[in-house]
Image (cartoon, rainbow, N blue to C red; front, side, top):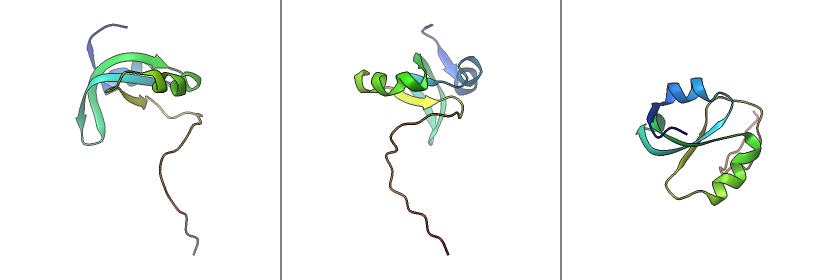
Length: 80
């Protein structure tokens, strides 16, 4: 993995349909602007890697896909 800063758009182009572990991320609100890619992972690998990863890494999926995993949020659906 090259130790160079990439924009989010570069990450999406280079690693589609995958998860990236990013260090030294620069953010614009909740959006990733750039960072240094530490690892590229599949949907099957992300859970175990995240559990063992060094603190301070940011994880995001480059493009939407058919993945599954825990959702850590509370939500409700109201039908009227």
